[in-house]
Image 1: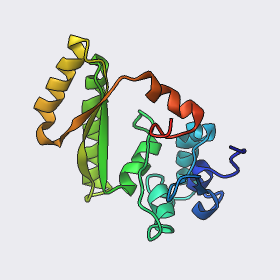
Image 2: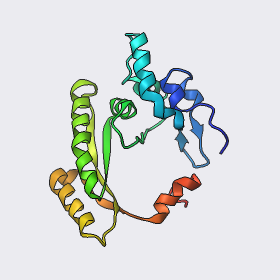
Image 3: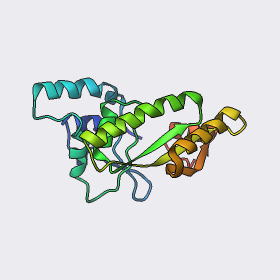
Length: 185
């Protein structure tokens, strides 16, 4: 739980090698490439780097970095709920994408944007990218709205929608603040 010296930010901005930022956890075979608040300003920095160097490819930084360790790890890339350069780098570096959808009204509005971004990525940057599936999350089964969202998502995505639905649980919200996976918490 010490200070993080190198993070994904330093890797993506070419300030350190990916091997110097990967941290082994106390869990068997679990390593992380941490993120810090520096990542919030990444978009501006990557655009500036591309402006200064026409050879630099702002959407390919993560894929290039991961290629150095590809034979040693399987990956899961967790992205913020935005469609900036962090997410674009993840989509370019990925084989497939898992789309989590909160069982709330406004979550459905963002799905169209996510799908559009995935289609653009598939067309222009990563033709091998597929949709692994859709995971419904934060369901409060006591509300009609939550159940309606489940129905609409299943209708639209069909068999791409996972049967498992993650309920709204306080424990799920608390686990990250304790720095442990939900199974241990």
